[in-house]
Length: 222
Ligand code: FPP
Image 1 (tube, protein in one colour):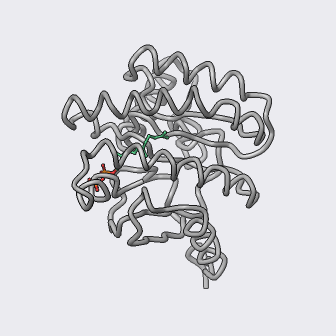
Image 2 (image 1 turned 180 degrees about the vertical axis):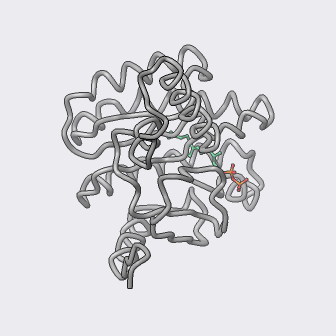
């Protein structure tokens, strides 16, 4: 969800205003994804590397996240959205963690869109964690190293219960992956748009889905 800072800078506003407007885009995209029948939507809301941002920006982002979780719970319920989170959630401030856990619990019976927030998430860190888990299981005799295959690695990632993404949308013309779901996006289709995240809305999301529909996926075949 890139471009919040640039959106604010273009308007001589503080960066946090860009993030605040970015929350509006989150609302629009979640609603549209549900209506369009998308099964899983993962939002890269806060990366492991984002902790190195100025303290006030980190605090403001955590506050926005907590407010979003509190204010959206009703809308998530009404739209049958089940909330999930991936990342090193223990890093989150206690208050945010509590509302997040509450929202996950309250929406656990919903059967529509799975909305997955990537929070304090880094893909390399996720892979290191998976390797450690597998090594510990091998040491305890619960995992035969010879049996480690792709399915075994995938089963030790945060995303073990979700399918690999079909489509990755990156806003504000950034041509990078930035440590996001490196394992899982091996065959994802990429759509990069110049639109800054706070300007990204329903129509842009639907256009990205249409663009995805025009792709021919070959998965290495012909
Ligand atoms: C990247 O833009 C955006 C972020 C690091 C934060 C994204 C967070 C939100 C949209 C709000 C909170 C999230 C939820 C799910 C309620 P940037 O700051 O790097 O922008 P720039 O590249 O233009 O500087």
